Image (tube, rainbow, N blue to C red):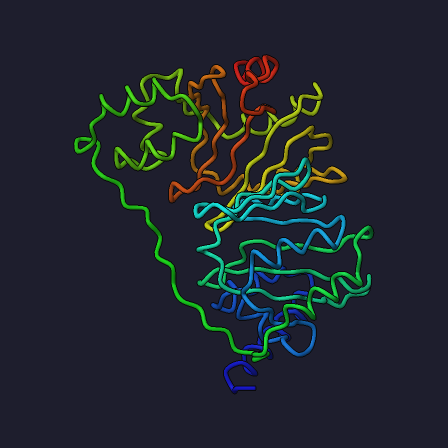
Length: 345
């Protein structure tokens, strides 16, 4: 073990002793390193480094049974329990899991490192698969639950164990792409016409690229307020509380560079904890740091199935934190109850 790794490990142990409830992501931030670098210091003890065969590993996760998938960004955490069903990595653009419970859009070009982790605690072992980007930021984690097959987990770890079990991790900085053209350099009329004639919500991203606009710039330049209207962030709380009260099924999208995780269904229990607004249901948890929200928009897009309405939430860099929709599928119009709920906000 190198002196650098040993020193980092000691720093982390000291920090854990001082703040036993500190989460590893926050510990990494305090120590000025990435989360992957902290995880690597435990290789050979509670951590096993896996080969970066991400599609194969994820395909084998079905064998674990019911697990909890976690995807997060700096402002929001999305946790969903279920079985990893129907994987498809045939597209060069995105891999998918398309189950009623586990619903993912995976961008493997951003995945770089994989670990199996067996955390020791007073409540017993907590086993997980953890995946990180080139910059050492966590992309996706899969935790065993009481209903998971622990033997299948051990077999998966043995199958994909890397030859290199070193405790040092190499990370590279991934630059943020937040440059924005001046509005005067945008073909605003063409952009507005394109938005007005969309046929599918999935065309929206391609439209942004075609006209060279950022997402928040697009919302500012929308054809009119029916297409995009800026609102106060407390709309999110009112919407989730209203959906819970009316038993209205919603869709909740949370992602980062490498993965988008989707919950489709009802929300039941909502609650505040400090600055965080939370959904705390048996199979779905959402944790949203309301203090870090910079912009909230109600956004509408025309499609062949009728108008689709979303609530889109952004941080101060213009990065999307979370999106909310009414439950829907292609070919089926948006729920009228969702339209009415959003209109009431």
